[in-house]
Amino acid sequence: MLVRDAMSTVVLTLGPNHTLRQAASLMSARRVGAAVVLDPDAGGIGIITERDILNSVGLGQDPDTERTHAHTTTDVVFAAPAWTLEEAARAMAHGGFRHLVVLDRGEPAGIVSVRDIIRCWAPARREVPV
Image 1 (cartoon, rainbow, N blue to C red):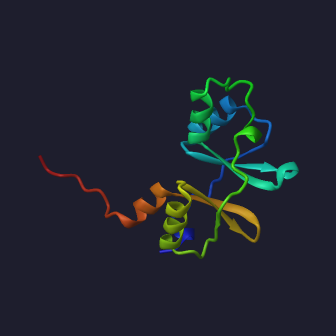
Image 2 (tube, rainbow, N blue to C red):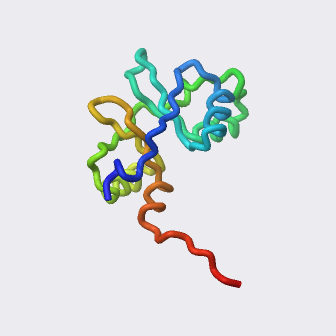
């Protein structure tokens, strides 16, 4: 199975000046754990995750004043839609992260998460009779 088969194609994109509260609110509303941050001044495409927001709040930083650009990972490992899920899982395990931005022709085409991969690899959940 390929990344294109597992990835979420609806990608939440944020700008570098969104507050962390705005980012958290949008991520919560869309039920996603990561968003692509488009910042042409800082190299283009980055990613912010729920863990980045959690770390900031845990440090006592104000989510109403902290901006996404200060918490965005910019040295992103990108996946290609034609990668196998094994390649994606290997990249995640090697890098210690749970989300990969999927690029197609240099543009964000989706995000694949550990949960997406598990959903594809694990058998469908069945109701167990009581």
